[in-house]
Image (cartoon, rainbow, N blue to C red; front, top):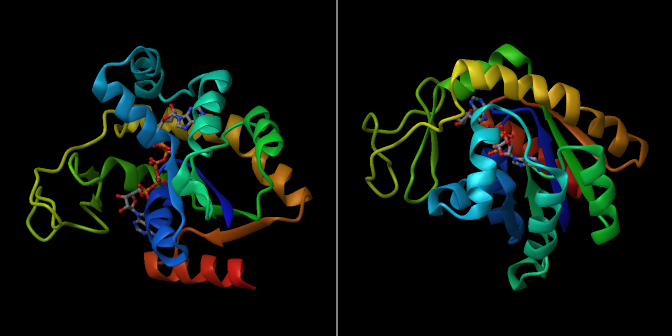
Length: 209
Ligand code: AP5
C-alpha cells in the first residue's frame, strides 16, 4: 500500500501515520522528521533547511524530491509506505507520479485556529519521537515521556508566529493538492476535528472500502 497524508500543520498527520504503519505493516516516511534529523546532525542539508523551517516556509522542491526518491527505494518500503508531509507542492506531486503509483491520498481537514492551538501545545520526545499535547494528549507526568522517561521538548517552529506562517504556507502551496488528487479519484477526506481514535477508524474504513 502506497499512501500520502495531506493536512495543514498539526492536522494530525504524524499521529495518524504512527497508527497506520502499525496497522498495515508499512514504512513511515516523514519528510519533516528527516529534515529535523539533518538539522540535529548539523549536515550541509540541515544547515540549508534550518532557517527555512524555523520561519515556516518550505525547503526547495529539488532538495526534498531527491531525499524522497532515495528513501522510497530502501528495503523497508517494499511492502509499501506512508508519505507524511510529502508532497507539499504540485511540482512535488508531479515528480512523485513519475516515481510511484499511489493507492490513496488521505486529507485530514481541520480549521486554522484549532491547528494553531494544537501546535503551540505540542510536546515531543527527542529520544523515541512520541508526540504529546499539553491540552489534548498530556503525558502522565508533566514534561516527561511515558514511553522512555526522557524530558519532552517543543519544536522550534511550534511558536504562534511560525505556526501562523506554516498554516499560510499550507493554504498557498499545499492546499491545491486536494484538487490535484481529487480529480484523480484517489482522495479520502477525513474530519480532523474528531477524536484521534475516530479519525484512525475513518481512515482505515476509507482505505479498506
Ligand atoms: P512537518 O514536520 O511535516 O510539519 P507540519 O506539516 O507542519 O506538520 P506537523 O508535524 O506540525 O503536524 P502533524 O499534522 O504531523 O500533527 P501531529 O500529528 O504532530 O514539517 C516541518 C517543516 O519541514 C515544514 O514546515 C517545512 O519547512 C519542511 N518540510 C517538510 N516536508 C517538506 C516538503 N515536502 N517540502 C518542503 N518542505 C518540507 O499533531 C499535532 C498535535 O495535535 C500533537 O500534539 C497531537 O497530539 C495533537 N493532535 C493530533 N490529532 C489530534 C486530534 N484529533 N485531536 C486533538 N489533538 C490532536
